[in-house]
Image 1 (spheres, rainbow, N blue to C red):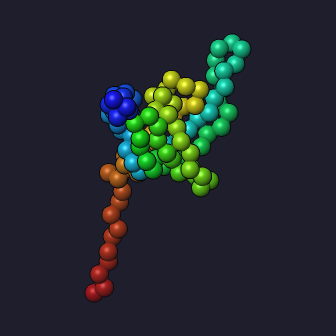
Image 2: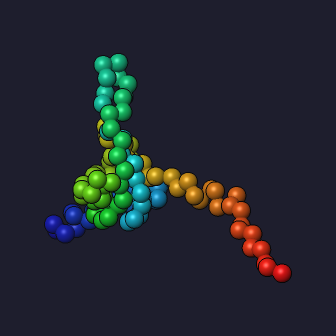
Length: 106
């Protein structure tokens, strides 16, 4: 029964995988604080790479070399710490790359 209960609530992981989270994905973490007027202010922005994915949390290697654990709720936007997938800049630029011109000596 314990084993059944362990894998019963993995729907948060499945939603995160549907939104594009995979092992090796680059992420951006924005730590924010709630102000008195109920608006948020961003305190710190960090970057990392997803290393391992478990039913309730995932591990990331941060840019400073530390390994940190996050809940899927933070990725889905329900917490004060926002985690988003990092957009790849090179993907849209590959169509505009100029090919090198090779001159032949005559």
